[in-house]
Amino acid sequence: MVDSSSGTQSSISAVIPVYSGDSPRQFDMAIKSLAEQTYVPDELLIIQDGPVGKAIETVIRHWKMVYPGQFRTHTIETNQGLGNALRVGVVESSHDLIARMDSDDIAVTDRIERQRAFLQSNPEIDIVGGYLAEFADDPASPYAVRQVPETHEAIERLARFRSPMNHATVLFRRAAVLSAGNYRSVEHMEDYDLWVRMLQANKRFANIPEVLLKMRAGTAMYSRRRGLSYLRREIEQQIDWYEQGFINSPRLCFNLCTRVGIKCVPPVLQRRVYQRYRQETPA
Image (cartoon, rainbow, N blue to C red; front, top):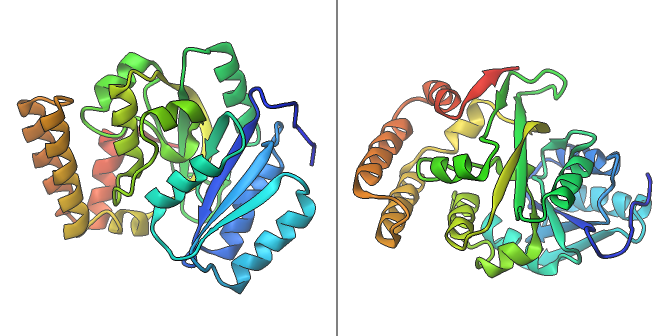
Protein backbone atom coordinates (compact mmCIF):
# COMPACT_ATOMS: atom_id res chain seq x y z
CA MET A 1 0.00 0.00 0.00
CA VAL A 2 1.25 3.47 -0.89
CA ASP A 3 0.68 6.38 1.49
CA SER A 4 -0.91 8.96 -0.79
CA SER A 5 -1.39 11.68 1.81
CA SER A 6 -0.27 15.04 0.47
CA GLY A 7 -1.75 17.63 2.80
CA THR A 8 -5.35 18.75 3.18
CA GLN A 9 -6.00 20.21 -0.28
CA SER A 10 -7.73 17.63 -2.49
CA SER A 11 -7.25 14.95 0.16
CA ILE A 12 -9.90 12.25 0.12
CA SER A 13 -11.98 10.43 2.71
CA ALA A 14 -13.58 7.21 1.47
CA VAL A 15 -16.77 6.45 3.42
CA ILE A 16 -18.17 2.91 3.68
CA PRO A 17 -21.22 2.25 5.87
CA VAL A 18 -21.54 -1.31 7.20
CA TYR A 19 -24.19 -3.08 9.25
CA SER A 20 -24.79 -6.55 10.68
CA GLY A 21 -26.54 -7.84 7.56
CA ASP A 22 -23.52 -7.26 5.31
CA SER A 23 -21.24 -10.06 4.17
CA PRO A 24 -17.82 -9.97 5.94
CA ARG A 25 -16.13 -11.48 2.87
CA GLN A 26 -17.62 -8.92 0.50
CA PHE A 27 -16.84 -6.13 2.96
CA ASP A 28 -13.21 -7.25 3.03
CA MET A 29 -13.09 -7.27 -0.79
CA ALA A 30 -14.51 -3.74 -0.92
CA ILE A 31 -11.84 -2.40 1.42
CA LYS A 32 -9.12 -4.30 -0.44
CA SER A 33 -10.17 -2.61 -3.70
CA LEU A 34 -9.58 0.78 -2.05
CA ALA A 35 -6.28 -0.30 -0.50
CA GLU A 36 -5.03 -1.27 -3.97
CA GLN A 37 -5.95 2.02 -5.67
CA THR A 38 -3.36 3.89 -7.70
CA TYR A 39 -4.24 6.79 -5.39
CA VAL A 40 -5.11 5.37 -1.98
CA PRO A 41 -7.65 7.49 -0.06
CA ASP A 42 -6.07 9.63 2.64
CA GLU A 43 -8.71 8.38 5.05
CA LEU A 44 -10.87 5.27 4.97
CA LEU A 45 -13.81 5.89 7.28
CA ILE A 46 -16.02 2.95 8.22
CA ILE A 47 -19.41 3.89 9.65
CA GLN A 48 -20.67 1.01 11.81
CA ASP A 49 -24.45 1.32 11.71
CA GLY A 50 -25.27 -0.46 14.96
CA PRO A 51 -23.61 -3.66 16.26
CA VAL A 52 -21.97 -5.44 13.31
CA GLY A 53 -21.01 -8.83 14.76
CA LYS A 54 -17.69 -10.57 15.35
CA ALA A 55 -16.92 -11.47 11.73
CA ILE A 56 -17.16 -7.89 10.47
CA GLU A 57 -15.28 -6.65 13.54
CA THR A 58 -12.47 -9.07 12.63
CA VAL A 59 -12.27 -7.54 9.14
CA ILE A 60 -12.13 -4.06 10.65
CA ARG A 61 -9.33 -5.02 13.08
CA HIS A 62 -7.32 -6.52 10.21
CA TRP A 63 -7.50 -3.38 8.09
CA LYS A 64 -6.71 -1.15 11.05
CA MET A 65 -3.40 -3.00 11.30
CA VAL A 66 -2.52 -2.78 7.59
CA TYR A 67 -3.87 0.75 7.09
CA PRO A 68 -2.15 2.56 9.99
CA GLY A 69 -3.03 6.19 10.43
CA GLN A 70 -5.58 6.15 7.59
CA PHE A 71 -8.21 3.62 8.67
CA ARG A 72 -10.82 4.97 11.07
CA THR A 73 -14.19 3.83 12.39
CA HIS A 74 -17.19 5.64 13.80
CA THR A 75 -19.88 3.67 15.58
CA ILE A 76 -23.59 4.49 15.67
CA GLU A 77 -24.98 2.66 18.71
CA THR A 78 -28.21 1.45 17.08
CA ASN A 79 -28.91 0.72 13.42
CA GLN A 80 -30.65 3.75 11.91
CA GLY A 81 -30.40 3.09 8.20
CA LEU A 82 -28.23 4.11 5.28
CA GLY A 83 -29.33 7.75 5.05
CA ASN A 84 -28.33 8.48 8.63
CA ALA A 85 -25.07 6.51 8.29
CA LEU A 86 -24.10 8.57 5.25
CA ARG A 87 -25.07 11.82 6.96
CA VAL A 88 -22.80 10.90 9.87
CA GLY A 89 -20.05 9.85 7.45
CA VAL A 90 -20.02 13.25 5.75
CA VAL A 91 -19.93 15.07 9.09
CA GLU A 92 -17.16 12.83 10.48
CA SER A 93 -14.95 12.87 7.37
CA SER A 94 -11.62 14.64 7.78
CA HIS A 95 -11.02 15.78 4.20
CA ASP A 96 -12.43 18.11 1.56
CA LEU A 97 -13.34 15.35 -0.91
CA ILE A 98 -15.47 12.31 -0.07
CA ALA A 99 -15.68 9.09 -2.06
CA ARG A 100 -18.82 6.99 -1.66
CA MET A 101 -18.78 3.22 -1.73
CA ASP A 102 -20.95 0.38 -0.49
CA SER A 103 -19.68 -2.50 1.62
CA ASP A 104 -20.09 -5.06 -1.19
CA ASP A 105 -18.78 -3.09 -4.18
CA ILE A 106 -15.38 -3.23 -5.86
CA ALA A 107 -13.67 -0.07 -7.08
CA VAL A 108 -11.77 -0.12 -10.37
CA THR A 109 -8.07 0.27 -9.60
CA ASP A 110 -7.68 3.87 -10.81
CA ARG A 111 -11.12 5.13 -9.77
CA ILE A 112 -9.99 7.49 -7.00
CA GLU A 113 -7.05 8.87 -8.97
CA ARG A 114 -9.19 9.64 -12.01
CA GLN A 115 -11.98 11.32 -10.08
CA ARG A 116 -9.58 13.35 -7.95
CA ALA A 117 -7.79 14.56 -11.09
CA PHE A 118 -11.14 15.42 -12.70
CA LEU A 119 -12.20 17.65 -9.80
CA GLN A 120 -8.78 19.29 -9.71
CA SER A 121 -9.07 20.10 -13.41
CA ASN A 122 -12.72 21.19 -13.13
CA PRO A 123 -13.01 23.33 -9.97
CA GLU A 124 -16.55 24.37 -10.92
CA ILE A 125 -17.79 20.77 -10.53
CA ASP A 126 -19.05 19.74 -7.09
CA ILE A 127 -19.71 16.04 -7.66
CA VAL A 128 -18.46 13.50 -10.20
CA GLY A 129 -19.57 9.93 -10.77
CA GLY A 130 -19.24 7.43 -13.55
CA TYR A 131 -20.45 4.19 -15.11
CA LEU A 132 -20.66 0.99 -13.11
CA ALA A 133 -20.55 -2.65 -14.16
CA GLU A 134 -23.10 -5.02 -12.64
CA PHE A 135 -22.13 -8.58 -11.78
CA ALA A 136 -23.84 -11.49 -10.04
CA ASP A 137 -21.03 -13.63 -8.58
CA ASP A 138 -17.74 -12.96 -10.36
CA PRO A 139 -16.48 -9.33 -10.57
CA ALA A 140 -14.43 -10.32 -13.60
CA SER A 141 -17.60 -11.32 -15.46
CA PRO A 142 -20.01 -8.36 -15.42
CA TYR A 143 -23.23 -8.80 -17.37
CA ALA A 144 -24.19 -5.15 -17.89
CA VAL A 145 -22.86 -1.60 -17.71
CA ARG A 146 -25.04 1.09 -16.17
CA GLN A 147 -24.48 4.33 -18.07
CA VAL A 148 -25.22 7.87 -16.91
CA PRO A 149 -25.07 11.21 -18.76
CA GLU A 150 -21.78 13.09 -18.80
CA THR A 151 -22.64 16.80 -18.68
CA HIS A 152 -24.36 18.86 -16.00
CA GLU A 153 -27.16 19.87 -18.37
CA ALA A 154 -27.95 16.28 -19.32
CA ILE A 155 -27.74 15.18 -15.70
CA GLU A 156 -30.18 17.91 -14.64
CA ARG A 157 -32.66 16.88 -17.35
CA LEU A 158 -32.52 13.20 -16.39
CA ALA A 159 -32.94 14.03 -12.69
CA ARG A 160 -36.55 14.99 -13.41
CA PHE A 161 -37.22 11.38 -14.41
CA ARG A 162 -34.81 9.23 -12.41
CA SER A 163 -31.60 9.39 -10.41
CA PRO A 164 -28.87 10.69 -12.76
CA MET A 165 -25.90 9.40 -10.77
CA ASN A 166 -24.65 5.91 -9.89
CA HIS A 167 -24.54 6.51 -6.16
CA ALA A 168 -21.66 4.22 -5.19
CA THR A 169 -19.40 5.81 -7.83
CA VAL A 170 -19.57 9.42 -6.67
CA LEU A 171 -16.78 11.63 -5.37
CA PHE A 172 -18.00 14.99 -4.07
CA ARG A 173 -16.87 18.13 -2.35
CA ARG A 174 -17.83 17.87 1.31
CA ALA A 175 -18.72 21.57 1.56
CA ALA A 176 -21.16 21.31 -1.37
CA VAL A 177 -23.05 18.42 0.20
CA LEU A 178 -23.19 20.08 3.61
CA SER A 179 -24.44 23.36 2.15
CA ALA A 180 -27.27 21.47 0.40
CA GLY A 181 -28.37 19.91 3.69
CA ASN A 182 -26.37 16.65 3.67
CA TYR A 183 -27.94 13.20 3.38
CA ARG A 184 -31.30 12.66 5.06
CA SER A 185 -33.05 9.54 6.33
CA VAL A 186 -35.21 9.20 3.22
CA GLU A 187 -35.88 5.49 2.98
CA HIS A 188 -34.76 3.91 -0.32
CA MET A 189 -33.97 7.31 -1.92
CA GLU A 190 -31.15 8.82 0.14
CA ASP A 191 -29.05 9.60 -2.92
CA TYR A 192 -31.76 10.84 -5.28
CA ASP A 193 -33.12 13.12 -2.56
CA LEU A 194 -29.66 14.65 -2.10
CA TRP A 195 -29.01 15.09 -5.84
CA VAL A 196 -32.23 17.06 -6.30
CA ARG A 197 -31.45 19.34 -3.35
CA MET A 198 -27.94 19.90 -4.71
CA LEU A 199 -29.32 20.77 -8.15
CA GLN A 200 -31.78 23.17 -6.54
CA ALA A 201 -28.82 24.73 -4.71
CA ASN A 202 -27.03 25.24 -8.06
CA LYS A 203 -24.30 22.66 -7.45
CA ARG A 204 -22.59 21.37 -10.59
CA PHE A 205 -22.57 17.69 -11.62
CA ALA A 206 -20.56 15.53 -14.01
CA ASN A 207 -19.98 11.87 -14.84
CA ILE A 208 -16.91 10.24 -16.32
CA PRO A 209 -18.14 8.03 -19.20
CA GLU A 210 -16.19 4.95 -18.14
CA VAL A 211 -16.66 2.16 -15.60
CA LEU A 212 -15.35 3.19 -12.18
CA LEU A 213 -16.97 0.52 -10.01
CA LYS A 214 -18.21 -3.06 -10.07
CA MET A 215 -21.51 -3.56 -8.24
CA ARG A 216 -23.17 -6.74 -7.03
CA ALA A 217 -26.61 -6.97 -8.55
CA GLY A 218 -29.01 -9.64 -9.75
CA THR A 219 -32.62 -10.57 -9.06
CA ALA A 220 -32.27 -10.12 -5.30
CA MET A 221 -31.42 -6.44 -5.74
CA TYR A 222 -34.53 -5.85 -7.83
CA SER A 223 -36.67 -7.76 -5.32
CA ARG A 224 -35.69 -5.19 -2.69
CA ARG A 225 -37.15 -2.46 -4.89
CA ARG A 226 -40.65 -3.81 -4.51
CA GLY A 227 -43.30 -3.54 -1.83
CA LEU A 228 -45.68 -0.93 -0.53
CA SER A 229 -43.12 0.96 1.55
CA TYR A 230 -40.82 1.46 -1.44
CA LEU A 231 -43.70 2.51 -3.67
CA ARG A 232 -45.13 4.86 -1.03
CA ARG A 233 -41.77 6.56 -0.57
CA GLU A 234 -41.41 7.14 -4.32
CA ILE A 235 -44.91 8.60 -4.61
CA GLU A 236 -44.34 10.92 -1.65
CA GLN A 237 -41.01 12.06 -3.08
CA GLN A 238 -42.45 12.80 -6.51
CA ILE A 239 -45.27 14.84 -4.98
CA ASP A 240 -42.74 16.77 -2.86
CA TRP A 241 -40.71 17.64 -5.96
CA TYR A 242 -43.84 18.76 -7.77
CA GLU A 243 -44.80 21.03 -4.86
CA GLN A 244 -41.26 22.44 -4.83
CA GLY A 245 -41.46 23.20 -8.56
CA PHE A 246 -38.68 20.78 -9.53
CA ILE A 247 -41.03 18.82 -11.82
CA ASN A 248 -44.23 19.94 -13.59
CA SER A 249 -47.62 18.21 -13.56
CA PRO A 250 -47.14 16.18 -16.80
CA ARG A 251 -43.79 14.92 -15.48
CA LEU A 252 -45.39 14.08 -12.13
CA CYS A 253 -48.11 12.02 -13.81
CA PHE A 254 -45.62 10.25 -16.07
CA ASN A 255 -43.24 9.45 -13.21
CA LEU A 256 -45.99 8.12 -10.96
CA CYS A 257 -47.47 5.93 -13.69
CA THR A 258 -44.13 4.42 -14.66
CA ARG A 259 -43.03 3.80 -11.08
CA VAL A 260 -46.29 2.15 -10.06
CA GLY A 261 -46.07 -0.11 -13.11
CA ILE A 262 -42.45 -1.10 -12.54
CA LYS A 263 -43.05 -2.01 -8.89
CA CYS A 264 -45.94 -4.33 -9.81
CA VAL A 265 -44.08 -6.63 -12.20
CA PRO A 266 -42.01 -9.72 -11.25
CA PRO A 267 -38.33 -9.09 -10.34
CA VAL A 268 -37.00 -10.70 -13.54
CA LEU A 269 -39.13 -8.44 -15.73
CA GLN A 270 -38.42 -5.48 -13.47
CA ARG A 271 -34.71 -6.01 -14.09
CA ARG A 272 -35.26 -5.88 -17.86
CA VAL A 273 -37.26 -2.67 -17.58
CA TYR A 274 -34.59 -1.01 -15.39
CA GLN A 275 -31.86 -2.07 -17.80
CA ARG A 276 -33.76 -0.50 -20.67
CA TYR A 277 -34.54 2.91 -19.22
CA ARG A 278 -31.30 3.21 -17.25
CA GLN A 279 -29.30 2.76 -20.43
CA GLU A 280 -27.65 -0.44 -19.32
CA THR A 281 -25.70 -2.19 -22.03
CA PRO A 282 -24.32 -5.74 -22.15
CA ALA A 283 -20.79 -5.94 -20.75
